[in-house]
Image 1: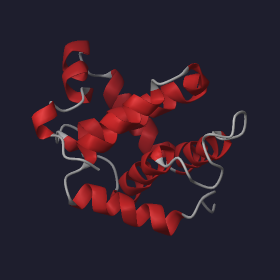
Image 2: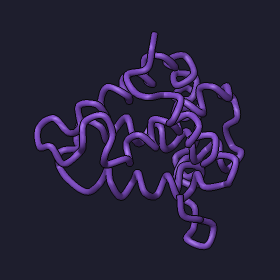
Image 3: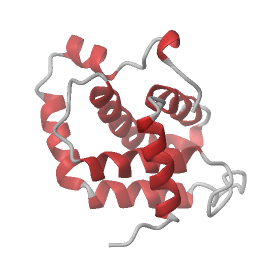
Image 4: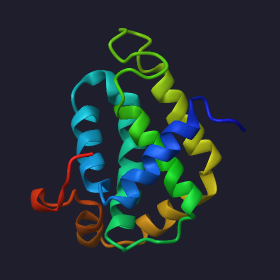
Length: 144
């Protein structure tokens, strides 16, 4: 199944984010955008899942994800942040449709990997999960 976006560009950006240690800053930026309005209600649960996975991977707590799946997840988060993607976010009513399509593609394509993370996540004690999925402290973030 082909991704619904210019995947090569976003996969390269995702690899750069991972290689340069900028995943914490990306997660913070996604949180800020995702919490900025009611129009993201449909995205919030999916974004939290992907962010939690990335945070757990970054902390070294969860590494049972393939590198291609991780890059695809990070690429989808990078795409979500871009205001001028296939359909600009400022177009009311339709600006988030492409973001939804990209997230849906990642969720569908990497369903097994994400389900394995859900199972691992559900087995964690709430206090541990809160620590594992928490955003990194400000001194550990570098700009995306």
